[in-house]
Length: 114
Image (cartoon, rainbow, N blue to C red; front, side, top):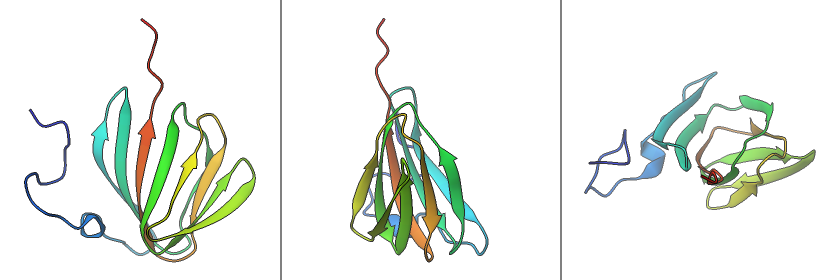
């Protein structure tokens, strides 16, 4: 059983080639989505954004290509390819494409006490 979806297995891949930038759009490809973790690739066209929101889990962004602006709890951060930033759970955050850019978002959700 495969836990990862939408990506070839047992093959060397370049993550930046797994999602393509489209003018005027944000393109996403979900690789994992369950109660514990979410992994999604994104390609942002310059000027596109995901508005302010929050999450119940800690969200780590790894920029794969280009530059993105991340606003976390009112403070702005620029991240370029090869850099990452963590957006803590329950803190408002947003993403803006300073230029075309690609990122991988990994969200780790809290375990429920059962």
